[in-house]
Image (cartoon, rainbow, N blue to C red; front, side):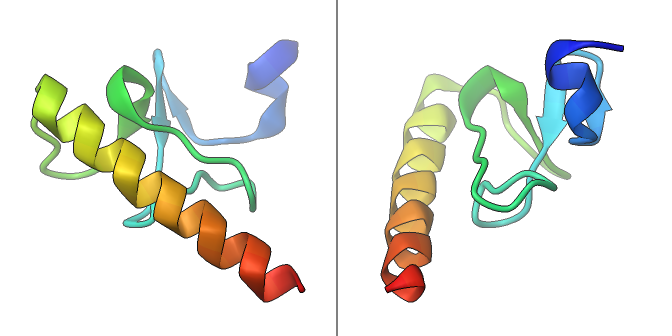
Length: 67
């Protein structure tokens, strides 16, 4: 096992499981768009754009909490 596969992220084929903040099983690592996987996901461009906004807000909260 090498690369991303060795990070224990809950890979489901080419997809990475994320929570509602778009964070993977590894704290501080986020995924959106075609790579993100969660129950009920609708695969559309508009969904990916919204996921990007959610991830950006989540990263900001994570960085602010670190200070």
